[in-house]
Length: 222
Image (cartoon, rainbow, N blue to C red; front, side, top):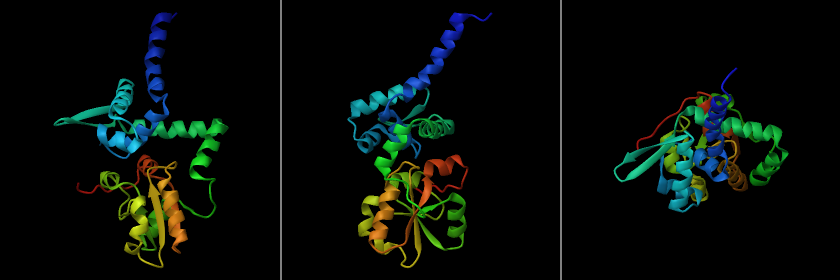
């Protein structure tokens, strides 16, 4: 027979990951880090947290083995411990969506109920982009675009889109994308494009799923 105490120790060690995931704030930080490395100050500002609170949550994620930090002078830049952490976040969402109706309801309240005829799949996006039939629009903040984006995508953050519409060619479909399937930016971009008489559609998910699917990614100079 196995050692019961040893088994308990093993399961308790495994539970450290679950404990680290047991916070909506920490899930948001993981979602942000899936876009690329970030400083504590940047993460705090983006997530609407104080520096002390952000640091505490990042330390919890670090204890769970989900993030690591690299010192750059006086600044610590955090990143996911590996691509498997991004995959874990994606699977967590999928399992929760499949088994918790409250998650689906909360998602739809946040994003709006899923639309029809407005989503573009990854294969279709690549095919139509290569044929010059669409403009691919990245509506994430510029640092996230620079950290990795769909090849050929134009960067216009969603909060600048209304003032920069003339940078997009007229008469061409625009396919917007953002961080992932639960990112609101692309939904807001499509609503704005449609209101301004442009043909706007949305990638079915976003950069998180694009990377996990092994699709091509370009990185821009800082």
